[in-house]
Image 1: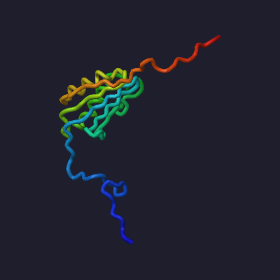
Image 2: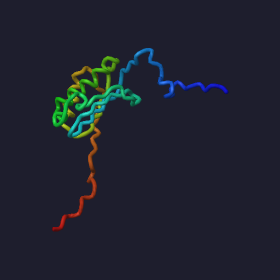
Image 3: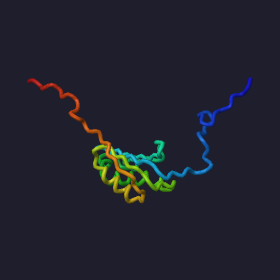
Image 4: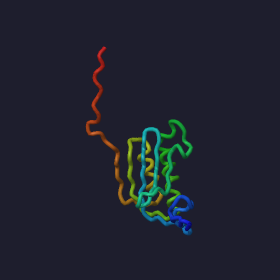
Length: 138
């Protein structure tokens, strides 16, 4: 019986694509998700594949210090440092959430030297929201 030939992208052989040279990424997206408790920064390429990410919690901040602007600034700096080595020069920033770390993360991105093509705010806003619970009768 003939032996089956494994596909290049299969999980059995453990390699997905060739990594003989380091990928150069010149453009990408930077997603900032700023919640009330944490700030998560994700950097992707144009296809949406995650290149690097960081959060205030993964930077070592615990408890209420995770929600501070300084923690968001540190998280953004850590996420961007790895993609600067891979050659990223331009990015589009998409910010989501009402947290305190929005502006601090954006300031860290601007200070890093990456040129921004545009800045988009995609925070979900309720247009009247859910129905309120009925009044409590005592």
